[in-house]
Length: 82
Image (cartoon, rainbow, N blue to C red; front, side, top):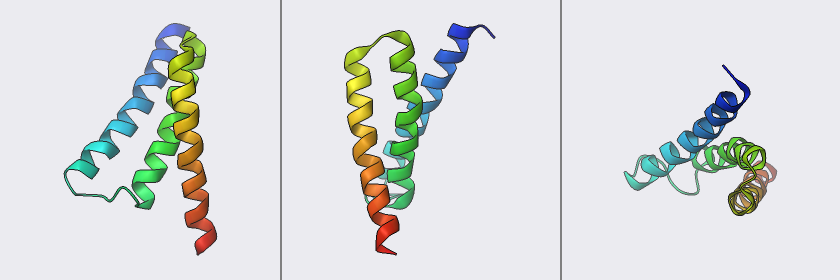
């Protein structure tokens, strides 16, 4: 697997995580406020942010970093409440 193939695989993996959580939420299987939904978004953003950075897609990088930052913020709040 070449370097660009690995970068693409990382980006697709992150997008899959986020989209899978989104579909489960839309189908009513998980709540938008659930640990699984928030963590899927947070960790999916790590992979998609890496992809955006490595491919030079600055608008996508900004989107994913902000999205991920808020997801990790919400995740931290869930841990601190316990």
